[in-house]
Image (cartoon, rainbow, N blue to C red):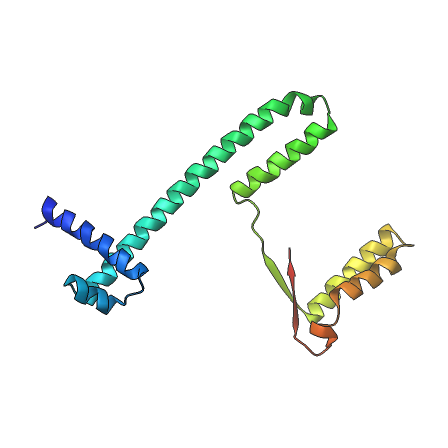
Length: 167
């Protein structure tokens, strides 16, 4: 049966468990010091860490909401100039939109891994597109792309089968 006194004792123990974990003690040492089992200590640590994560998530959410509201106020302050075509105001609008997207985690980096054959095909497609759009500059840009991609780590053409591109 759970009573308020037992619940209070558990919370005090969990606070002590956290203090001991932060001090670098093992679960066995903490159990011996507090007169409980190693598994009880493990459960207490799990519960405390889950609560801490929830608190962190909540505080992060509050901060993000506060910042989003500040961005709304900033946007409202420049909106008339944006509508009038003021380029500086439009630049600020883009910066505000960029910041908003970051707070809302709309920018998610991803990685594309291409084998040598896939990379060659993609590179050839890009060169054809470039040549079609800017025939005079295609050779110069192609040489720049080849130099940028390189042959692999430290110029070793045998190093690795794939190239990872961060987009």
